[in-house]
Image (cartoon, rainbow, N blue to C red; front, top):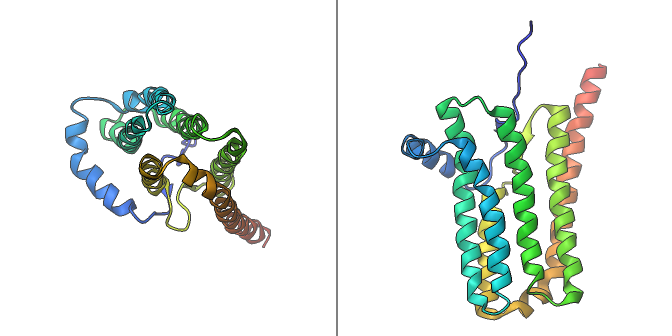
Length: 219
């Protein structure tokens, strides 16, 4: 019987901070695995989703609650970066489960962040937030569809990945806290436009790679 090979847990492509992250994870993973397993690290993502929504709701009355959302973004980086690494280190065998649950919860988490911003924005700006959720969904769909035809799972494009995205969101929270939500409302349409262009470039490059595979197979 041919061994079934599942390679989605091996990501291709590297962001600006990828190599620094990997060195840190390799150095600290033996200590992390003594206290918790990868399965639980993935499920903790549910706590982060609830926490982000709570802090955003509270920020309607006191904008400084957004610091809580920034702390959750840091904690999410930790659990999201270590869940798969700890699972492999402990040989848990939950490769497909980890792939499925990790990325499902990631999408819900990032959606909850933008839903949380919806608590703070004017009603006429909320449409732009839903636009961002659609764009992020398109990025994730592109990654999953590309994996199904190229057998390479990529979550970083043009040196930009999830870690860089978290840093931008933390900076955004800081801007809102010190400059007010109106500043973000004014630039939000331009941010959405930028990410649509970025998404389009990503999809264009991906379809070229898929087209090349088809042509090589035809030959």
